[in-house]
Amino acid sequence: MRIYVCIKQVPDTEAVITVTNDTGYDNEVKYVVNPHDEFGVEEAVKLGEKTGENEIIALCVGTERAANALRSVMAMGAHRSILVKTDEQFPSSDLIAKALAKVITEEGPADLIFTGKQSVDSEGMQTPYRLAAELDLPVVSSVVGFSLDGSTATVQREIGGGIRETLSVNTPCIIGATRGLNEPKYPKLPAILKAKKKEIKIIDISTLDISEDEGFRLKHLEATEERGNARIIEGTTEEIVDSLVKILRDTEGVI
Picture (cartoon, rainbow, N blue to C red):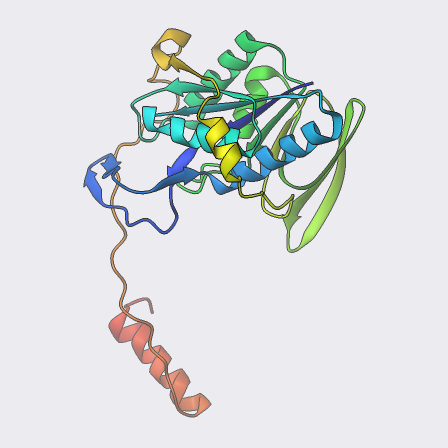
């Protein structure tokens, strides 16, 4: 069984992001594997441990520094990895999906493809669906439960309000993983050292016959305004309501 895990390298959610121009930010921050993608990686590794016959291939579209994220994923258990190199800080979901589809088609047919349900930087939530359209495969996202029986996958997905639905889907298919599917294991030192020797195949995106003008283009990026500290309003219910209305009307100007 050939399993692909599609990941993205993103800034750490606790990193301080400084916007440096209209469409970019200072990239001298800590980068990590997108947290949602780690659940997909862990699920692929679990499948491999059950059968011992799976090949797990990690794929990433990103800058050259994204090789570090692929090393982390290989330490988790991926056998090899492929980096589609681009200089774009914010490649579009459409461009990413087309690049991933090209690589998967060239490397060999997939039995399963895991992605995260979304990335924590741009949060477009489009890549699993666009990749499925490119490969003409079924897709289920927001997956918190997964089992495989032959060529049929049974999945549970969150649909809002704490409600889950159970679906059966034929493989090959694309699974958009999220928190609750499993608990990713922290790689041990021997696995980290071993990952440094594993293969990372680098493909320049310009060689894939994909126009980097496809999809959306980021036109403007700006930091959110700093907000003041929270205020605690004390008093009777009537006093609190009067104070709140005054703040909303006179200070915030929303009423």
